[in-house]
Length: 129
Image 1 (tube, one colour):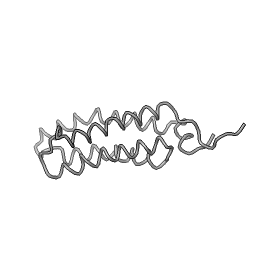
Image 2 (cartoon, rainbow, N blue to C red):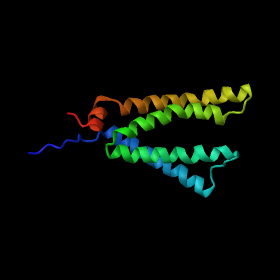
Image 3 (cartoon, helix red, strand yellow):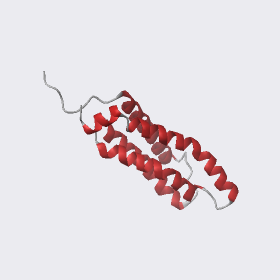
Image 4 (cartoon, rainbow, N blue to C red):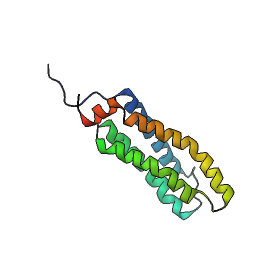
């Protein structure tokens, strides 16, 4: 019996990727339909590029490409910083609200990082048994 060089994809990776695919497609369709308001001109790029990055990374991770998980984690780490820079007015109250709103995002980033860098995920992406 021949053994494949690629490991079987962990279920957690599959579920995570499909959740990200559905969410990114939903955001892109909402942008196209005009359901998400873009009040400031500099909001176009982050709100368009973010879902595209998530979509590309998710599809690439389903194919077992190792670079995709690093790009996804780098994007998710930079996202709170971008939200703080572009999402908050310069008033102290607005910055406090944004910092409080980022707490769930930091928990999600930690959970995604845990899923993507567990032993089973490492074996899947690197291809070692």
